[in-house]
Image (cartoon, rainbow, N blue to C red):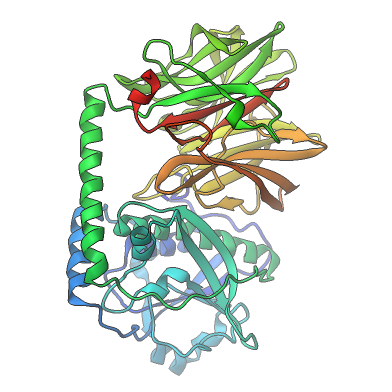
Length: 540
């Protein structure tokens, strides 16, 4: 949230409609969590919303087992520490909290358009359901009460690949709650971190849904998933093996940190090449491009030039993980290294290279510079100069800039964060003028895709049979870059975006690999990256 959305200036209303009148339901006046403070701050900063009431309601009763409360408190102190969110809107300090009885006595509840619960509460099911847009609810509140919060534990303990987040609404006259939005997120090794991470993402998700409502004044719901019985706090029988697993994970992370300092622990990403089209290639036919010396490689892009095929890729070594952009020539199933194309003081990766008119351009990932950069080639392939920049002050990654049906589109992964910077959960779209980036029009519903299993770009979008496809990362099983999706883009304009997954590629096509997160294709050939579990496997 801090990096891209938390501006001190208030957002100007983009609609002639009256602001959406919102009430927040909480069980406390003090001690708000970071995600709750961030949500309030963002509502106050946007003129499309009027935070009309913060209503203190009865807390959801319940008593968690003492063993769980102790274990959760210890985990919170050791793994869940984060800086306190500092509100930027001056109105935050002037907020008035009213009890439900006070609100009813003054008759102010009738002036709301909707309420959103931000705490586990004890309220009648139909409370506030008669408001024009009903009563909104985060799914993680079902796994908490006044005594404890156990959201995220079940997924970690059970080893589930991803953790679900839903926002539901209850409206008068409807038999059941309806789903407004959902997303899946890569399950963390720690339940506390799993919960905190997703709650931070929940702020972005609910703000998107509220912005949609300000424009249309129509609630659009999704098919509701099958309901599951309410989960209870894990007992001692589950907590003991869970604690042991977290301990082993921490030891492994500590060992990895030491190995990285010694130059032996870098993630061993490598490239594979094969024959096939991007829509149906078989990765089992791919040939490993054995690393030269100790160069590790990821994020490959193919580029044709003067009858040759070049590969631009992220390059690093076990001793120096601050990556740069290297280039080589693809000759059959061999990569002939040519040198360093681009190097900076900060990490570079994802060299999205393309040709436009008489120029050759590249957009490397430069999120450490807190801006998006377009570079132009002045002497192919090793000399480049900065051509344009955009998204100043924002944290963007894995950007793709391409024309489609007469318009230029920028697909990028921004991170709206406070404690957990993450580029795997949000896909943002802009219509732009082209590589000059003189103007950018954001999509009305940014981020158009939420969730780490589909949002992050994983290579060059491509057209096939008149349709647009987007490779995306499938981050799950606690592994960054676990797998690949091919997403068919079914609708694309500044007012709507819709895509569906038509193919998933998992890291099972070569012995020893545990992840594959990028692909590109050109002229009947494809290239894909993969990560080995152990660097030693590359030397066999």
